[in-house]
Length: 94
Image (cartoon, rainbow, N blue to C red; front, side):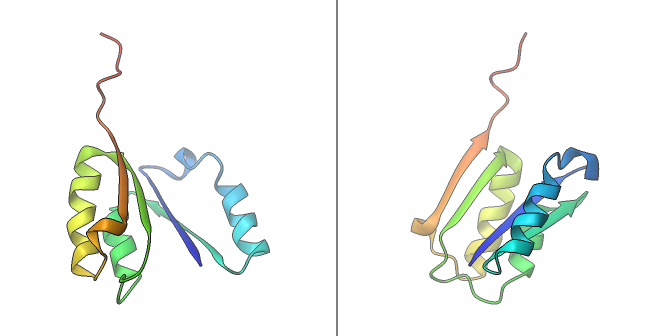
């Protein structure tokens, strides 16, 4: 199974949510969980009792990844199976 937790401040920021809802409807092994105005990491961690054996991919701001990884480790995720890409904001125009 694949679970996609996608967080945004506002529902309008989930610009292709309809696509992911349709994908989830068409494929029973794909689950789309939009998180509006909340913490994605908290929502993902709350959705599972044990994350041992899961491969986890995270992309987002440093503060989000930094807060999410400990929550997932507490749920049994293995550090070697957590892959992340932090958005640092260093590419902003001056």
